[in-house]
Length: 218
View 1 (tube, rainbow, N blue to C red):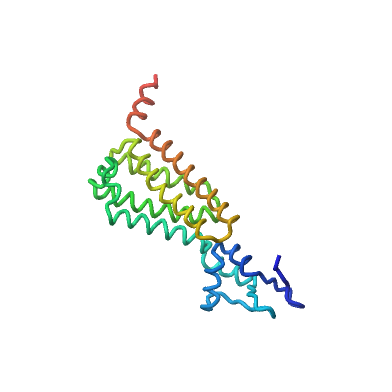
View 2: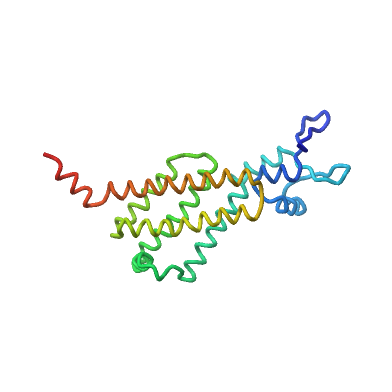
């Protein structure tokens, strides 16, 4: 461990690798930030970089989410926007049904963005209501647009593929392997809980489900 405390000050200093792991970014990214003056650093007599833990924690507090997680969200959004611009997936029947209804398409797109915002917060606080809210919102939108549960699931799994691919890409780019494994677990947990809430919400609210419930009353 390269963690050190300055004499008489109780200051804790982290190596480049340790500070990058705490931030969830690649060491090269942190090195560039330090060179640009975005994060304070100092050098040891041997020329090695050191970062004050309080400066790293201040960065995390100021930015709300880990920069590495922000990069994950930004990459996923970029992939989503690229797909929409190219009209990718337009051969799929479910895609055509959604796109044919302009308001529906915009509503689903807005929920995709909202999902990423909730995911970013979920990685920080693990609030189980976040994926549930998104799942129920998807269910309500699908029912309002007369989409089948199958179409809803295909659309969600298609979008989820970009999210999981983005997570794998972030792991490949580097950073803290341990931290990214934690992020991956959080992402998959959020994804699965959203999916379950979406199915439950659809089944509970579907007209035929309400009719069946009504017919069972004496």
